Length: 97
Image (cartoon, rainbow, N blue to C red; front, side, top):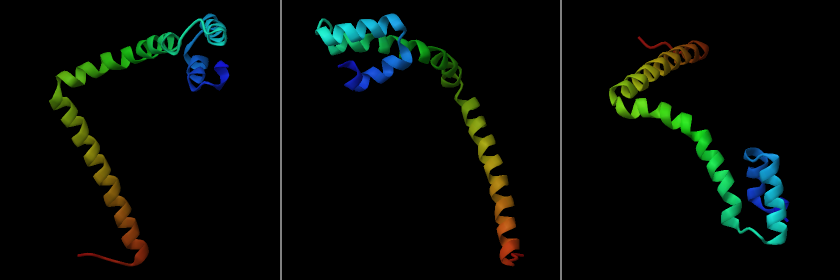
């Protein structure tokens, strides 16, 4: 029964009605194997990942841009941490000179 197979959940997300029907029939009749069953999911996931992988190429090729983004994020986090610590110190009545 395909609905007892954990792979079926992926078909519900990634496969159209035709593929889902093919999987249900093929699985119940043992006319397809597990590898065949998974192939449409693999293709769908790869297609979904493709735009993300293409956007990532820009960053893979420009390491300095990645470092700049990280440094910018670090500085923003430091500012938030400074403000939070200042609030905590005020609330606790602790003053550092």
